[in-house]
Amino acid sequence: MTLIDTNVIIRFLLNDIPEQSQIAKEVIEDKAWTTSNAIQEACYTLTGYYQLSHHDTATQLLQLLKVVYVEDETTVTAALELFDKTSFDYLDCVLITRALHDNVEVFTFDKKLAKYIQNHRED
Image (cartoon, helix red, strand yellow):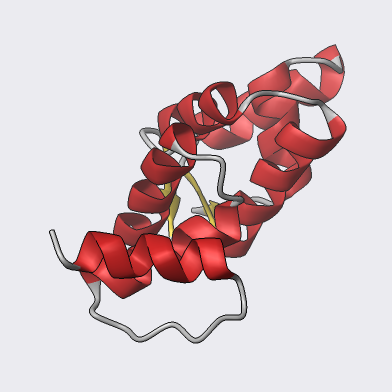
């Protein structure tokens, strides 16, 4: 398996530089894996630089996870699903996922984040 970085993910998803996009496709189809950090960076790049919506970004990255292995796949998948449905940034979605699924206490000065976690723990 080949470890791929964020640039490969972006080229694969956007197909915006034909030569690189084709190579990215070939590498990914030949079994690839990536880190949760690369998914985070891809999320920020797609929403920040390329101005994709949360929904479009989450949808594309979740599709990618069907063909690329990612470390901590359960957390990454849950965080992307939450990212699709909320205005939280991806890292906040990871923190929420850890808090709710792994019963981890999150200390933050972000009142919106803390309130979301508190409200959803009571469900």
